[in-house]
Each structure stands twice: as structure tokens, then as C-alpha cells.
Image (cartoon, rainbow, N blue to C red; front, side, top):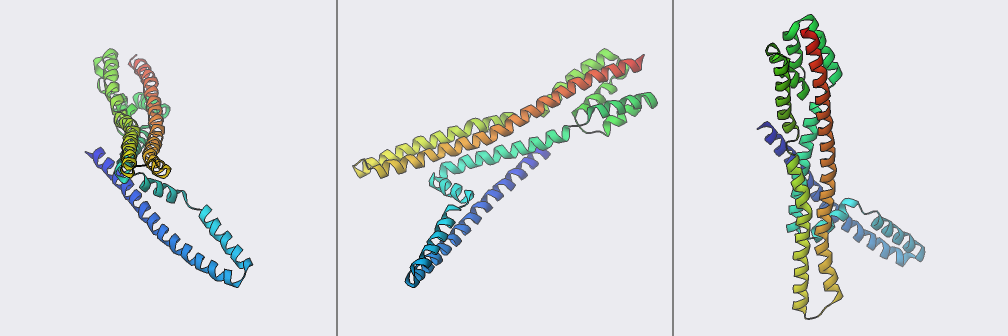
Length: 276
């Protein structure tokens, strides 16, 4: 339940951020239009005053047009690509990023200094016995400490039982580490598909426009194809972004699993030495 609440919170924050960005860009666009109108008026007045002033004003207008922000261009292309399909692709990105951020936080909290933990457990066994080692594992976060605690809890039943318990519980923890990755993979696959669907529907609409016009006009064909292909571009961008996060998470999980295996081997050696 806590993970679901955290996921919904992150998704809501991302949605609010996206909405705020779009609203800010709209206000910026209105302000830019006003500035352009004022600049045009200034240019007209300057033209009446002289050619030198006109040249300076035109240079300023061209410079302002060249420095158009990337967010403004992205918003314009997003609106041009039919908001119905582009909105679905945006939701895919939001949910995928929310899952990725939640997994990154969880995996980073699961990372510990394994060698330091092994040294503490070994020292606790030598000074206070199994109960002291259990206290060390209880006060240490991460899956490796949980595995050590599980092994220490079965210490009285023998080393072989400890090994079986560690292997079984390690599989459970591995599943927890990989939880949510399948959903991110699903969003990676869905985003381009939604883009392709928007492209096909956009092409159908373009042909409908050609049929209604009764003539193959280059403007009609080019405009329809542009709108249709924009959904594919945004779908591929979403898939690329989520794929980067997915690969990072897979590498992080693999690293944690390797650390778990190495640490458990050293842990069994410590228990074997302590039993003797």
C-alpha cells in the first residue's frame, strides 16, 4: 500500500509539473505575441524615422525568433500532433517515469556497505554471540542484512539449513528488487505502438481530406503527413527515455544480486568458523 501511494504521489507530481509547464508556455507564447506586436509597431515607427533604425529593429526581431525556447517548440509540435493521441503517449511517459523514480529510490535505499556489515556481524558474533549479530542485522537496512538475519535465525538448526534458508529467502528478495520492471518494459513497448497508431489514423485522415478536396494538393498531403508522423516521433522519444531508465534499473538490480551472492558466501564462511 505504501508503494502504491508513493507511485501515485510521484505520478501526480509529474502530471502537475507537465500541466504547469504547458500553462507557463502558453502564457509565454501570449507574452511573446504581444512583444512581437510591439516590436512590429516600433519597426514601423523606426521606418518612418529612417532606414538605419529599421535595420536595427529587424535584427532584434530575427534574433528573438531564433532564440525560441525548446519547450515552446516542443509544446507547439505536441499540439500539432493531435492531443488525443499525444496525451496518451504523455501519460505513458508519466507513469513510466513514476515507476522508474520509485524503483531508483527503492534500489538506492537497498544499497549498503556489505564489507562493513560483514565486519560488524563477525565482531558481534565474537563478542555477543548470535543475538548480538541479529541486533546488528535488525538495525541495518537493505536485503543483505535481511538475508543475514534469516540465516542467523536458523543458526541452531545447522549450517545446511542456514544455506537453504538463505537461498530461499534470497529468491524472494530478488523478486522484490525486480518488482515493477515488467511494467516499465510494457510502457517502453506501448509508447511506439501508440505513436504508430496515431500515424496510421493521421494518414487515413489525410486521405479523407484529399478525397473531400477532390485534388491531390501538396499542402494537404504534407500537412496530414506531418501531423501523422509527429505521434511516431513522440512515441519513440518516450520509448528511448524509458529504455535508458530501464537499463539503469536492470544494471542496478544485477549489481545488488551479485553483492548478495558474494556476501552470503562470506557470511556462511563466518558462521562455519564461528561454529567451530
